[in-house]
Length: 394
Image (tube, rainbow, N blue to C red):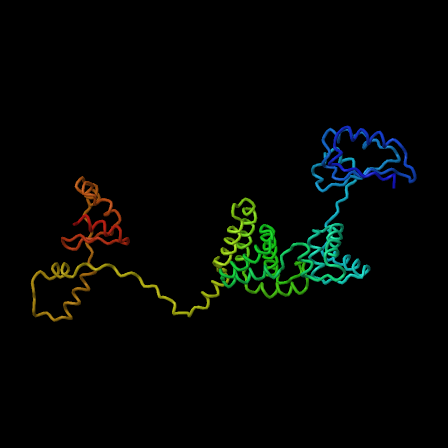
């Protein structure tokens, strides 16, 4: 219709372009009730062009309507958006696109399988117009009978089987298989960065099944969903997260790599040599599964006995061969309980110059002391202090 004028905002973004629009907007429509201006990618207009259009938006002629289309609404000036009615369009779901493509294929008598339609829909990234354009390309390449492999070849995509082979080689720690897969991908001329992007999506699908336990959130063909359900049993959540971090980092780095092939092969080898992470729940189950033993009984520490020769010397100053062995044992037991009090001026002795200069004061502070006769007995709970005093004694 002559009353609907579409303008590309990217190439008509100057003040002069808006001035021409304002001049033409004064004229009434030729046929319809309204004249409509559709400005695509309106966020590309300059600030001066927006300001030039502001007066017309505030007081538009009764026959004039504007439609602003943009993918980056946050770049439009607030003074413009405040004078417009905003509608946000969501991405179309993959299932909706597949249903529409099935309808078109039926109308055009085209034979195509579900896997091919799913690939086209995912390639369109939520856009029905893009999906139909891709569908036309596939038909031009394959004709009326379209199969999965022909679709993959026409769009230069990587078969899902490569991704499943990579994940299986990662589970089996097969580095040699990783090199064979990398060679096949490179010889077929696939883009390595796009390959890593597809591998990242593949691992995302596995993670989704591991976390949710179902394949409902995976947008792929039903037979591929069954494969993900089976393969997910070989993976743990934490392992998949580490693998995804590795692939995401490699996807960014391979763009600037001087030897992309080496970087790609190195990434696949890291997947095959990556250690698995032990889950806390598994460790707890292993601990609980250990054979139980009797509960340990707490035993009070026995006091360090005073040397027997010292005790015997104090309590038996003279040797008496007539005493029987049981009587001697009784004397030892009784003597071990004898603890003599330290002198009243013991603190002064510890602070004396002789003790400080010898370095013994530090060790004596941590000891339990008692006197048995003329012998000073030191008891320590820490082996370090006992060794320290022993070294000073030497």
